[in-house]
Every structure is written in C-alpha cells, then in structure tokens.
Amino acid sequence: MTLRKRLAKEAQHKNVRDLTWIAPVAIAFMVCLTALVAALQKVVNGPWLYYLAIMISCLAFGAALLTRRAISAASKTAHEKEVDLDRAEAEWLHPLFDALARIWLVRGPGGDTEAAIAVAVESLAKGTGLGEIAAFLVDQPEGGLRLVAHYSLSSTSGKVQVPDLAMSMAQRALRSRRPVESDAFPYLRQHPIKTHTQAKAISALALPFASRERIWGVLVVASEPGSSLSGDQRGVVGAFGEILAMTLEATSLYDEVWRSREQMATLFEITRDITSHLQLEELLGSIVRRTVMLLDGFCGGVRLVERKESAWKYGPITFWPVDEENNDLLLGLESETKGVVEDGKSKVIEIPGQSPKVSDGEESGSNAAGIIVPMKWEGEVIGVLYVLMDREGRPFAETEVSLLNLLASQAAIAVQNSRLYESCQTLAVTDPLTNLYNRRFFSEALGKETARSAREDKPLSLIVLDVDFLKKHNDSRGHLEGDKLLCEIAEILRLVVRESDIASRYGGDEFAVLLPGATEADALQVAERIRSEVKSGELAGANISVSLGVATFPTDGCDAESLMLMADRRLYAAKALGRNRVCGSSVNFPGRGQRSR
Picture 1 (cartoon, rainbow, N blue to C red):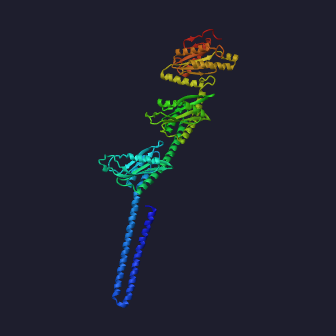
Picture 2 (cartoon, helix red, strand yellow):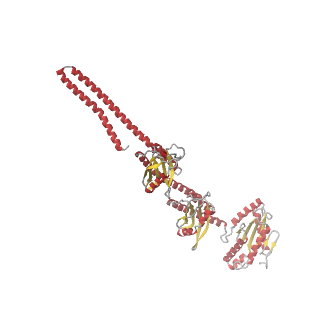
Picture 3 (cartoon, one colour):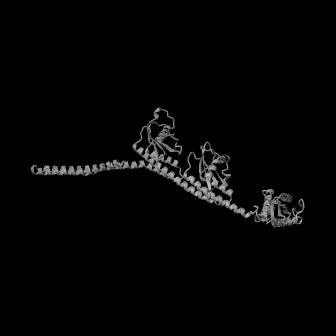
C-alpha cells in the first residue's frame, strides 16, 4: 500500500472514531431538549406528558448507547480488516526478501549463483502468483543471453520449456535497455495441446536489470492464463530485478577481491617455492608450472636469453605441460619473443584460427590468447615467460598482467640466485686455470667411484700423468707459457676421455683421469692416446711429452688411497724408465723416438 493511500485510510478511521462520540452527544442533547419542553408543558396540561417525556428520554439514551456500540464495532472490524490486508501484503512480499536473501548467501567464489537464482525465482513466483518466470543472464563479452532459471506454476510434471517468444522478448529488452510488454502471447506448455481452447492469452513482461550502466540480464514474467499482471506484481518484479543486479555486482566484486587474495597467496607460495630451488633446471620447471596454474592457462613456457655483445642468444624453452601440439604454439612466437626481449615490455597476443588443446585432451571451442612477459634483472632482460589461455574472447585484466609482471620479477631473482649458486658450485670444484676438476672434487669422486665399483663388482681404472721437464720449460720460456701449455694439455684430456670419465688437475704439473667401468687394457689405450696426442702436437710452440701411470681396481688396490698410491708409483716408474711412456701392471709402452733427458 502506498503512503498516500495509508494516510487516507487513517483519516477515515479518525472520522469514524469522532462519529462514535458525536452521535450519542447529539441524541442526548435532543432528549434533554424534549424533557425541557415536557417539563414546561407539565405545568399547563398535567403529569402524563411528563412521564411520557421521561420514557422517551430513556429510550433515546439507550438508542444512543447502542448506536455508539455499533459504530465502535464497525470501526474495529474495519481496522482489523485493514490490518489483515497489511499482513497479507507483508506475507506476499516475504518471498521477495526470501529470494533476495538466498542470492546474498551465495556470495563468494565457492557459491553457485545460478542455482541460488533458480531457487529465488521459484520462491518469488510462488509468493506473487506469477504464472511463469524466467531469468536470463548476459554472457560477457559476447552479449548473448543464457537461461539460468525458469519456473512455472503449471501442474504438469517435468521441466517446462520457455517459449521462444520469451527469448525474443528478452532479446528485445536487452537491445532497447527498456521493459518490453506483451498482452497476447500463446502460453505454450511442454505437454501436447489438443485443442485451440487450451492456448489462453496471458500478460507478459520482459524487464532488464542493470547496475552502473551494466545490464546483467533480463527477467521475463507472465501471468496465469486468462489473467494479466497486476501493478503490485510488476512492482515486486522490478524491485527484485534491481536488487538482483546489485547482488550480482556485489558478487562479482567479491569474487574479484577473493581471486586477488588467492592470487597474492599463491604468488607468495610460488615465490617461496621457486626460491627453494637452487638447481636451474628444476627452478625453470617450477616457474612455468606454477605460472600456468596461477593464471589457469593450458600451456606455458620459460626461456632464458643472454646478450652477447650486440646480439641476443636465445636458450631452449622449458614447457609445461609437455604437449607437442600446444608447445608448437609457443615455438611459433619467435618474432613476438624477439620484440618483447628488445623492447623489455609485456605483450598480449591473440592466436586466431586455433583451437588450443587443453590439458585433459579435449579441444576448446575458442581462440587462444597469450601473454609474453620479460624477466628482468637490474634492468636487463634475462628471459621471458609465456602463458597461453583459452580466454573465450575475454581481454586480459590489468590485475592479471600486473600479477604476471610481479611473478616474472621474482622468477628473475630466483634465476640469478640459481646461476650464482651454480657458479659458486663450479668454482668450488673447478681449477681456475684449466677449467678441469680440482683435486678436492677428484678425491671425493675417487672415493665414491671406488665404493660403487666394489658394491656393483665393476672395474675402475685411474690414470695419473705428469708433464716432463715442465720446470725447465718455465725457466726458459716463462710461467705464462707454462700456463698456456697446461691449458692445451687439459684440452687434449677433454677430447680424449669419455663424458662419464673425470679429468682433473691434481697438482702443479700433474693431472689425473678417473675411468669408471674401464679395465686396465682400456685405460692403457686411453693413456697411450693421451701420450701420443701430446707428443705429436707442438704444444705452446715446444716439444713436450708426458709420463703416465695406470692402476685398476680391484687388482691394484681395494680402496681409493691404495689405488692412487699404485698409480703414482707407476708414474714415477715411467719417469725412471726415460719418461714419455705409459706404465701399467705388467706392460710398459715406450715412447717413439729418442728418450727425453
């Protein structure tokens, strides 16, 4: 009831209450006047008229009391009826608030908004006596309508299909951004219509609901067959639509805030995770995996780059997940990658004509979109991050780009830490002059390999070699030339030995080579090849030779110390026999040409 109508009703009640007192007073006044007239006539005509006046006065007074009681009862009855109408109206509006409460309760990323809208629509339809109600939401960014809730008071069982005309009205309301009404559209049910008389005309209304100039959807309501929508029903539906729009907006904002909170929490976890990896390969895999999961992508990658003078050197891409079809999309972004590396700015890309394959093996139905973000360290680009997503035409949010840039900065720090760690690890086990392993690493490797050979019952050979007359070479040519000679011998060792072998600079002019799984015969062949390569080449412009000793586990020693001692003894035996030779357990390989002095 409107305020104006309520004030009018209050005035009517006041008039009735006043009337209950005015009527008895007026009657009493008339009775008193009659009694006065009778009293005057008593003096003239006699007592009978006096008694008659008294009787009339009593009857008038009784009639006044009965009139007042009747008017009071009528007023009370009218007031009670008005209260009942207000209560009925309040009960009629209760489904609206119940429906709105159901929607408010689903706020948050875990709530099923569409299910709540369906329950709210049903509650509203039952409470307001609507024949049928349907709720459509606008799909972003296509702008199409999608049915999310439908309820009908039809007694037929099963789901009732919304007539096509309802969709047409909703689309017209969406385009015009105004309500659309129809007073004559066929009320079609899912069950078959046997006669034309079963298709009754109804009143229908399509009402768009919006907030802040954004249309969230359209409500389509219809009256019962053979009736029309009342003004109160229209008002309630309009109020429901307005608050539904505000609720959806609040839910969207709440979801965005919740998603941002979750992303920041995930970013913290990612930062903690990637900084815990010191091995570069493991670190890159963790970075791309967590990045793809953070942005809900279907494919991603990370690629390190390095500036070499005026050109960029591009490393391989680390993919996640490893899928040939999806990874080919990243490999096809070569020109975009160069642009990001040279400009140092993020780039959002569209991949038209593609139906990217998602991780579960199914193909998505829309084009892929991707973003490439540079990883910077002290202003220099050291790599790029790729993320490909099935965006369904939706643009990247500014928060997503900012989040990915922040993640790329953290990843760059982690990469530099990993590189620094690996550099320290390399310096700790590498000889700075020859870049071979140093004595510390070799001693540890000898102990581990000896224990493994004993455990697996496999052979292990050791070669120890020494440069002949290196001191004389340094005295005549200088220590810089001597260092150059050592570096060239180290290069020969790298060329001759296998990848599984361990070559090291054991001392000043002494080298050692560990050959896991090699027998003494195999080790003697490798040693002879080293000797011949050194002797045949003009290393540092001088005629240089080496002496070598070979020992094999377990025949020449059962542990690392005894094996090293035997190889060292055979080295000195080779020197004693004239240098430029290899000495093993039973066979000596004399060098070609004259003996060195």
